[in-house]
Amino acid sequence: MNLQEYSAIVNSSAEEFAATGLDINQLFMWQIYKMNSMYDLPINSQPSLDNLGESPLQRMQGFMKTLQKEMAEGAEILALLKFREYYVDADLSHPGFLTENLVLQGLDEKNAKDVAEKVVSLTNDMDEDLDGYEALSRAILVMIADWLNDMTVYNRSEALKYGIPSESVLACIMGSNFTKLGADGLPIKDENGKVQKGPNFQAPEAAICATMFNDGSLIAEACDVIEVASLIEAVTLPILKDPMLDVLMAAEALEDELDMDLDEEAAHYIDEEEEEEE
Image (cartoon, rainbow, N blue to C red; front, side, top):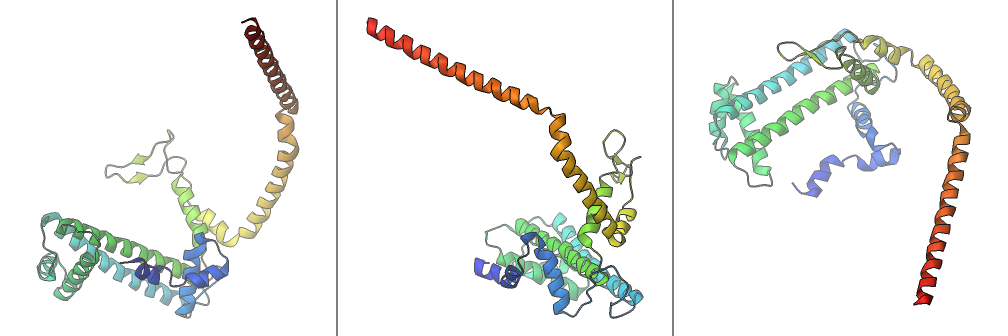
């Protein structure tokens, strides 16, 4: 794939996005809004179970069916990974051999054929001259990347339908994750390696609730804190740091500079006398 082909996909909405004046970090959020608008999907600016075009029960049932399809795609990737475990020298120039083996891994014949053709197409489009194993590995990684991030798009689009502020909610969830450490600051894991909740764990739900329904009062409180902090920074901190120390240090630095100039001048005078004596 050359740059023109790549840009045809990645930059398909670049001109319109640039006109918004938004920061590049907001590109994905804007694209989700654009996608929901384009496909006439619900958009709520505030958390709500209304304006979904259907009952929230129907909406949830429909979304779960979408996720089930994604799980089926995950099963396809799993079959490919099983194939990769046993066929290090697999010939991927034709999809027939791969199709047969994917059927052995549990996929139905039509599904196996579609997956095999996708893998062959991906490997044929790779720019480098790779052996079959490395080409298969890259194809699988591409499929995993597509699978994982498809679900990210589905989830983010679904959140916008309910007016859920995903980025803020994610901050609450990730902040909660950082409180799982043990009293010694180390992770606690069970025999399977799963991270356990430590004694200082704080669940995210209360923060999520505040983010979604109490953000106005939190912002007002934060503004008050910032105002007080600015006064502290303007007066209290400079006093605590003893501004006279800055004066004394500046005076000392100036004296050192003057002494250095005098030493240099004296050294230059001595050098001139020695030259005259010679």
